[in-house]
Image (cartoon, rainbow, N blue to C red):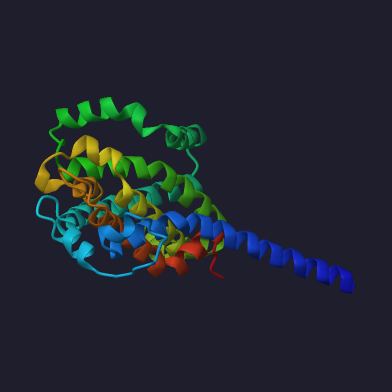
Length: 281
């Protein structure tokens, strides 16, 4: 018995060590970017891992935030204009549709659901040209509205799949009791199902926000006016004209990266509950 306990303890220690090493390897590139953002260029030219001289400064962050050609501050505001509605719209629409797929029976329900889920496998690069042509025909190119529509359409399939599976795990008895009391389907959904599904909705919203915020490909296709460029589009423009200013480039990358990290940290409790699965009594 003691030998079994000792072996189990040894396996846990080995697992923790392996996890720590993997996390360290994963963090090494970020450490390099972070060191480049807080140190002068003369120090990191010899390698960011060398600390013969260490002079931390926030000058690079200020330079990236107020960059004369491509200020990250303006890009952050533009990204929020896209990311917030492009998160709310698909999560709300997909949640309503997912509830219909989970609770109502109608002809062609399962094939339609499979078709919607199959859209998740479609690469963005495959539809780039027809998507641009379609957006151009409706006058949505170089418009935040067009980018919001594309992100919403792209986010609905996976959100529908995620929310439908979550709704199927919720107890139907609560809905039946409310329906006996005369509650309509819409009232049941918004006053009973939505509060019960808040962890799942938060999980979907966090993932959708992070993907929209970090997007570069779709924004590159649809947004091209200098004043409308998003944060991810402005980061490459920080490199300079005649030489690459690695400090400002690294600082701009960290500023843009910080937003989804903060959102995840704030919503972490709900995100984990939504991923694991949560059912009210």
